[in-house]
Length: 138
Picture 1: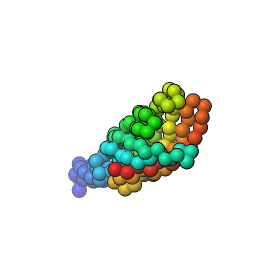
Picture 2 (picture 1 turned 90 degrees about the horizontal axis):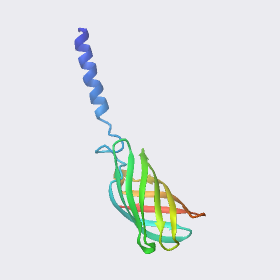
Picture 3 (picture 1 turned 30 degrees about the vertical axis):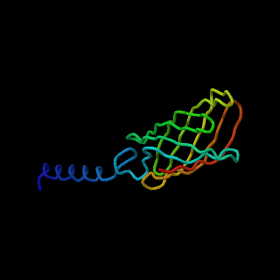
């Protein structure tokens, strides 16, 4: 076999091998978080029904929004997907307390096909620190 033919065969094999495994944000990746989610944050023992709207970009960058209607809270989310792990940071204003610098940090496991998100939430709101859980599905 000549060198040119071996190079062509190797190149095709390499392209096929690389194309077969989707990564975060790619179509077919099992742990993309995409679309509307509903569920709750449980913070300091209080269940707070909530919603999230998420999008995973190629490379695993996650953006979105969240709402906690009972408290009038809306916020912007940014984070990453790595394997089945999701990290999110959300900035918000709490109209009930007047705090303009609330931060919620979620560290969660994503269910297969991105249908569920479960994990921990840490909240920092104007000097007050609270922890709890997050559980969402679509």
